[in-house]
Image (tube, rainbow, N blue to C red; front, side, top):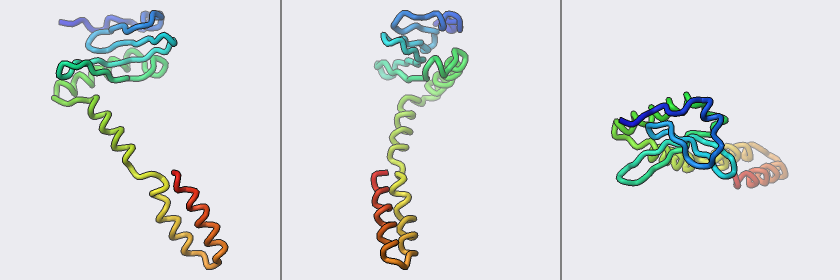
Length: 133
């Protein structure tokens, strides 16, 4: 049986050596040469090492990282792959409608409401500036 909870909050705060330091159960603290420190969850899936970032040590406590690691282990036990699920969610968010795509039909209704051609042209010009959104 693998040992868990090897680290304490004090030990984590004292870590300075660049590298990966294990807490057990796939939870690690990664310290980079730059000094940045973050939590990672590591799992072997189909013979390949997979890593999932859990956040900076400044934002995520040891207790929070352990809770998240427990949740991720549970997902793997259920036959789910939280790493792939997270990647899919990111792709879906990127594919969501942009602000410009959302605003275009609305802006068109505003432009059509103007009777003065000069005002209509000014509003259309502002509308086209939104195309980059």
